[in-house]
Each structure stands twice: as structure tokens, then as C-alpha cells.
Image (cartoon, rainbow, N blue to C red; front, side, top):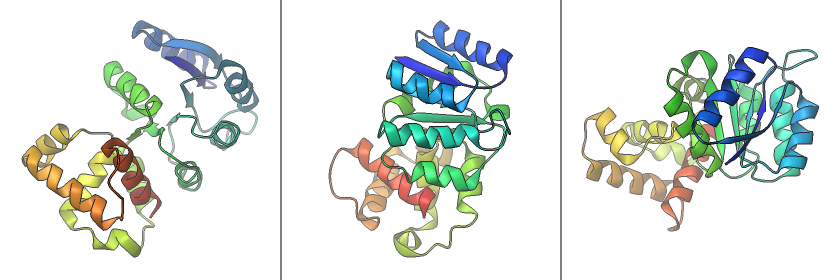
Length: 214
């Protein structure tokens, strides 16, 4: 798997590179600027890009803007945002930019290298990996209108855990219910959101995007 890293702090950038390489991933480019990210995406055709939000020169939103531009140039480019901050406006733009392959993790809440690498792989495969705090912030302005308002409280719990990238087994363990119950809730979610029968992984991603963008 080919990975591009865009992070302004040298020690973190170098640490990410070493960690990913130790798990068998290939880091093709490691850069600290938005333009560097775009150049790497064009040249390397990576499977996933790991991007910080705040980059030089202003350290405001250069990283996530560069990620949006990269997904515009390469539609569907998987992007995992790794930041200290939750930038709600741009996170929503990223989610709305089409398809899955989206993650948003907070640096100070990543505690395990294997879990992080699993999130990278999941995003590269077209899935989602959202930190619970990011989900909470994105949903803070959710009015509950439309199809999402039809979901039961339990279905919303299941969908929130789906957004984190959890499997049915992991959701069942977290909510202390059976996997069969999770499957029934998931099927109900798909129906209420109007997601037609297709590949279940794809429907999970579409349901999550509808949830976070709602």
C-alpha cells in the first residue's frame, strides 16, 4: 500500500513514516506543505493520504484545503485527516466531496499503532475511520431533519459506531447486544435512509456519510 504523509512537525512525520513502514506500508512521499501534498498525489498515485489540518505558512486550514483539492484532482482519493483540532466546516466539505475513503482522527487520542494502521488500511479500502469526538462535533449542528429523524436512538448508536469504523461484532460488544441484533438495526438503517440493496460495505459508507452530513 502506497502512502503519502503531509505533516509539518518533523518528529511526528518521521515517526509516522517509521511506524507505517514497520507494518509493511510504503511511504512514497513525506512532505510538510499543501503544495507538496498535491505534487505527491499527482506523481505517486498513492492509495491513501495522511494529512494534518494546519500547515505552513499560516497554520490555519492549509492541510484540509489541500486534501479537498487533491480529492478534486483525483476523485475518490482516500484521505485520513490527523489533527489536534476538529475543523467542522472543512470536515463536512471533505465528507461531501464524494464516496468513502475518509477518516478524521485526533492526534492526542491515537494510543495504539496497530489500531492506527488498521484505520489507514480501512480508509484506503474506501471505508471510514472517525474519532468519536469528531463525530460529536459534526453532529452538534445536526437539526435531525429528513431521513435521519426516522432513526431510533439505538439505530443512531449503531450508526455512530459504524462511523468509527467498527465491525458488527465490535458494535455488538460495545452495546452489549447480539451480532444478530446489530444486523437487524443495520438493515433498518439502510431501509430508513433509502439505501438500495447493494454491497453492504458500500451501504455502510453511504449511511455514515448521510449521518455525518445530515
